[in-house]
Length: 341
Length: 285
Image (cartoon, rainbow over all chains, first blue to last red; front, top):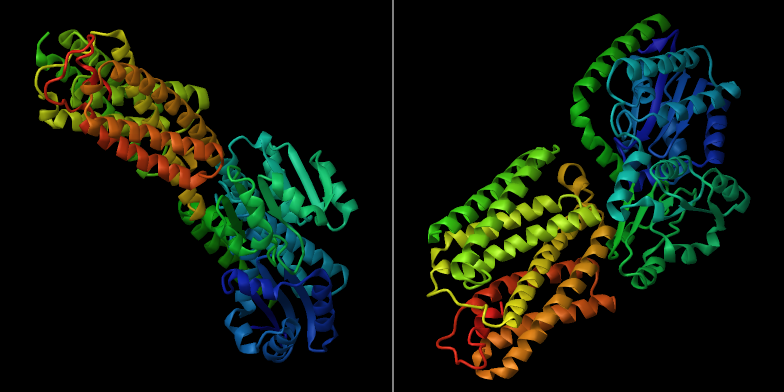
């Protein structure tokens, strides 16, 4: 039985496991659309509880509802994203009951993350939960599932070696920057936007010696506030071509729906600085940097998928830890599911 | 000292270089750190044995040991390892020691393996004029610089390829940064070309005194190598030839330069005696 008193616990989602970065770009929700979707769901009589987890690597809808909800949900998402239902089905997953609980546990613990063992997802999940709870979108079931998932995540981090080693995007990006620039003290870092991952990446670069930071944003005040954290300078995104002339490391972290750095923009700039390589770290989704840029001589482009792939090279050493953690989470999920029923 | 003593010493040096290379290669293939102290001890050991072997050979031929292909290859390996020690300290270039051990071993091994290279007639004197000796030493030292340039270019290409293909770990994380290699490559080509230009100028003055002493083919090859490096350096300075294209060119040029050593060190028939520079032909390596 996958129901609790006639209601089904479900999760409908799409993540790096089922969708490429190009598809995830199309499925990405901005804050406004995520809130609209949550309200739309709660307005439905059959939905008792719901929570939307929206990160750069996953969009997931957790809910408790009566009756068949998968098809109507897929239809709603299809309309929202302008993507055919068949394509949406191909790139999504639908889990119910105990499987949904186990999935929530694994997501919270970083086991389902693109960079296995990373910590950022727990913060994002807690934020999503706080938001949903604040709007009274969660109830008895989701409250219990998520509170238990936070405990499970804590257990995994304390009792297994899953999170050991280089697992944050910031660390990976810093290692790559060192391989291109060498000494980071002299490197000019340009952070585009104020996305969380971009900010953390810049923080990691600063912790390894980067001193020359420029934060460029559409909102200059916001850029200035962030730049102050790194004792850097702020600039308008309109000045991007000038900023790129001297940049050694550029980090994309805006919410722009279109790439800001294109081959047309970068090619003439790189021709004028042929002996100065550029490392471009794109942490945004939709992407800030056109993938074609990678073909320009002396430009090394890394997006979220590349960074995750590099981070997971360390995973082999931690596979036994991951297996232990998964088994433990499975048992915990089973116990909770039995208690919920 | 007999003839085999110096070969035994240079051979021991070669074994040490080979062991150093192997002791580093095996852990690197397993994506692990190699034992740096042991590696360095072996590399220094190889260098000491090779230096002593060349010293003994010098005493034996009463000249700078650049009188046949075997000696030229040995001195070239020696010069590149010596330069590696200096550059490693100056620029903290990671893995340069490792590549130098491979190069030192390769060159030394080949020169020992091809017995005929050490049997090219009686040893040729190059001590008659100090300028000719100076010319020869400078020329071979510039080749040593080009050898290190080829190694750093190879490291550049490996790092560039790994970054472009999003490869990490083991080898690649230990290679020096792209920017660091770009700077060092620019400095090395300037140093190499400067040394070779002085060597060519001295050689030219000697040639002017005895024009028939150097065969046309040798002269063309020697000038060709010098010109090729000079043009490459100028193109680099004008930023027309940079990054991976420059590294590829340096690597290709060094292969050509290495091959050119054979005709350059090969003795032409009888040399005319003119103003005490009868050995000029063989001195321009």
